[in-house]
Image (tube, rainbow, N blue to C red; front, side, top):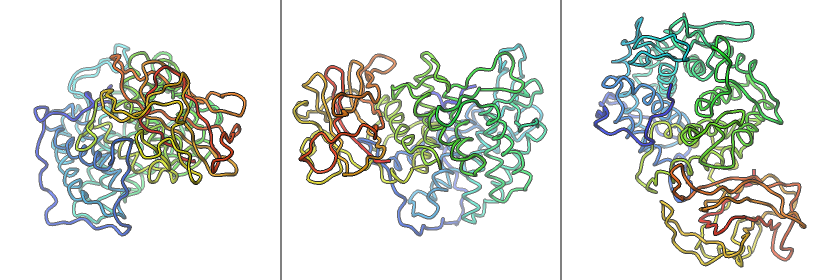
Amino acid sequence: MTDEDGSGSTASEEDGATDAADVSGDWTGAGGTLGPYPDLSLGPYPSLLSLAVDSMLANAESYDTSANFSHSAAQGYVLQAIGELLWDAREHDLESRDALIEAALAEIAELEASADQVVGGGPAFGLSEAWDAFGDGTINPAYTAYTWQSGMVALGVAKIARVLGDLEHPEADSVRDFGVALVQRWDSSYTEVADGGYWWYSTQPSDAIAVHNTSGLVSMASQILFESGAPASLGDRPPAVADLLWARMSGNPSAGYVWNYGDDGYPGQPRPEDVSHALVTLQVMGAAVQREWWGGSQAQGVAQTLLHTMWSGHPARLHGFVDGSDGGDSEWTWSRAAIIGYAAHGDAQGGNPAVFDYARSLLFSSDLSRYERDFEGDTVGAARVLALALLLSHRPPSFAAGSAWEVVAGDADDDAPPKRPGGVRFYSVDWAAPTELARGLTLPARTSTAPNPNIVVDLDDGALDSVAVSLTYSSAVSGSIAQWDGSAYQPLGTLPATLDEDGTERWMRTTVVLDPSIAFDYQAGVPGQNLLIQLTGASVAVHRIEATPL
């Protein structure tokens, strides 16, 4: 079952667009108390907030399940994104608050109008065609209800209900009631086991299978509704779903964890979950950490999985499965979905804030640069809308305002030694003068003139903490990134060729973490600790260097 919205862009008006109905009446949203909601940039994109809001409104206008039953999951993404952003901005001024609430209520009205089409009655959502979900010969009839589509919608409705309840909006109770009905529709499709429980994959008894990501959607919806004033019984099962997931995982906090796509009841040999479907399972893990069902050591292990096992070194193409195994060409599209799981763990207590910057590199490399999004005024598809909302709402303190230091090729003094500690720069003798380079997007860059060019990260004196370093670069061949330890370069990570799945050279953004145990002050006469970082690969072009102490 697909977890993507298809094209990587919003649906056209011909694909079921409808104008958002004005259902807000005379109600006006409350203003914030902490000033404007803080924005976030990403490389040449000055405002992820504008990109998110524009995309939310465009997607809300494009998708309509009452006109096209296949749109339900996409509408669920959009509602989750709107609810996530509005909840995070609830104490801030947000110019688009009322427009987003109006759009969300229109989406919910469309979903309510189509929620009774499934076999056995709704409210629920699924597929309009017959389907053998697990390839075992058990064919579900058309309009079977599935926890993927139903849970996507339920979680989106739950997040909107939470916002409306906090605002005392006149539609708060009716939206929450719809969310409760969506969850309670699955009451009879739940299995309790000794070490937890799970909601079935579909309402068909043959699909009484613990598929963690689909069960997790209903679980998160149920928990948020419970926390928003729904019946207390909705809070009983979500911890059990997290318990079952934990009981079926293997690994440790130092090495990371591995888990399967499905376990109890799964036909045949269970397989590790692909990084695409893990976009939901990772959110379940994040919710478990946030609510202290899981501890900091578990968050640490999840971060290890994200930073090492799933990360391939290629910022647009992760390893295909959560155990690090290969997923073939599907990795290109799976990685775009996986941004969501990374973003959800950016601020996990006990985790690693570097996960947040890896998520930014994934977003830039696999979507924004890949599809040549305009720097201002463009939009992204429904799944990436949720990724944007989670990036905005799950910023760790070190990245609250973006990267601590950055320099763009062509900036004044982009290669000059600093007058005070703190910053990044080109090591001037290794780079040509800045020029505009077209690699899909057109950006200013310096191109290497040395076989192994260097950059410098200038840090404060004293003990070196972990530092995330990110490069926006282009290269036709693969290389590496290494840190000078005083006698040799020690590898930090790969610098893959920036070729997309069609072989086109593009800009990409990759992230590594410096090794504090080998810190060496390369320029003793320059303020601070001046760490020399080497790039290998012929004719590397670098647009932007960023660094942030973690």
